[in-house]
Image (cartoon, rainbow, N blue to C red; front, side):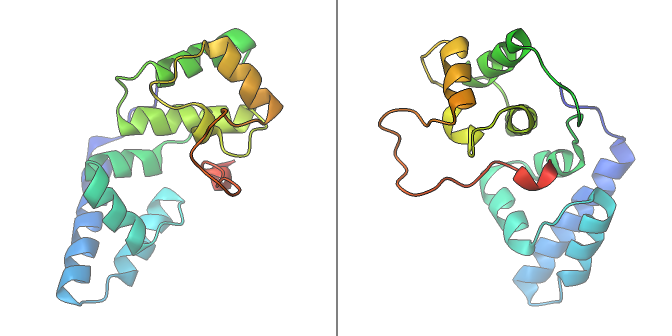
Amino acid sequence: MPPAHDRATVERLLEIVRRALDSLQSGADYAPLVQQFNAETGQLYDIEDFEAAFLTMDLRDLVHIALDRPPAGVVATDAELEEIIGLVVGGGLGDRDIHYWLTMLDRQLPHPAISDVVVPGRRESPAAILAEARAGRSPAGAPWGGPAIPHERALA
């Protein structure tokens, strides 16, 4: 599971995000706040990322996602990858957990857009989804037309 983070750090970063969004709404300069957030998390977010998170998730999840760093250099076995795929497609995970596991899978598999293959609600077996991801194929009848955007490729 994603790592635990220091509560004071999470609260401080959450306040930075809230102040940046308040500054955006009031017309004040939000750029220094976004820069501070990025400096403390090692991310490259912009104000649009904060806005999108505000509209789609709990801002606390955004902070945790920014702080989460799935371990680099870990090579998972097929059984472990299937277990991770099963967790994601099985549903019931929050945004933060899904993001964490998709980032882990993205580092392990050659598919250019792992989040298009490993999605909550898919009915195929984790083994079949793993084979599809290893082959770099997208599901038949997938709704996207052009090249997919890689999931969190910048974190790798």
